[in-house]
Length: 266
Image (cartoon, rainbow, N blue to C red; front, side, top):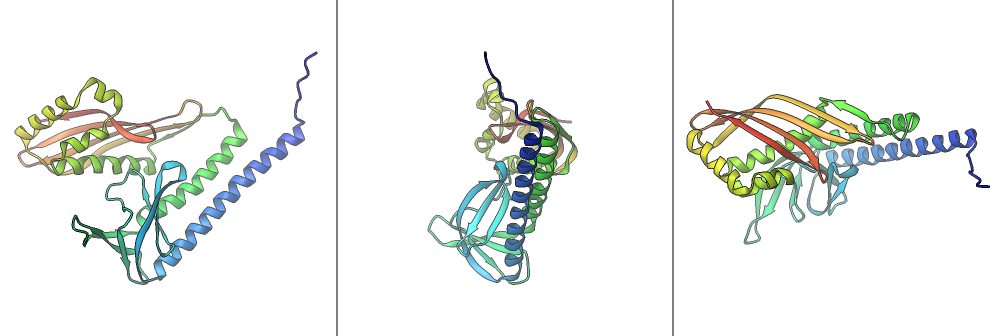
């Protein structure tokens, strides 16, 4: 006779409590550690180099560790990321810092002014919300889909990708923009057709000088049927006329990529 062991209800509840407590404790430790790093960063005056860059928080953020032990977070999809070897200079009692990067001859050149709180505040919120969500999912079921529509944090994440995409187009870097499309998009529309589309639009309306977001939607489903879909509509200001540009995105291999691109000219 086949025997199947069934865990008593009391043990199931105890195991669930242990898992929830561990998740909450991990979140608390992360928040305390990030809070200390934030306080030390604000107080200190320093010049330090970026030592390492690593993916954190499930791949959503890149954490850059400095030679002085402090850390700076960026959205992984954000443009103008720090790079290993960059020099970070900061005065005391401020979150603003200057970044310098080596040029081709090895001399440091001023890159820009950055704000420590731009991404770090969002990371701390993400850790807190992530642990709340974990507790809810454990209490409900391991086969539950959690659906999130039009969250501000998802909008900011996809906007960072769109900003990087448009930055390539503003610079005339057509080749660099191809990596923003999904594999399926590139299978249907090869890069020569994309390049021809760019040339046609720029020939009629000119290059992009600026752009503004008109509309957006996001849909994130986490669980057994997970998916991440995004919709952004922009008005692109070009040197000769304006274009209405609608982009849809989805996550592919952990990265947000373009699935469709519709450009309407006057």
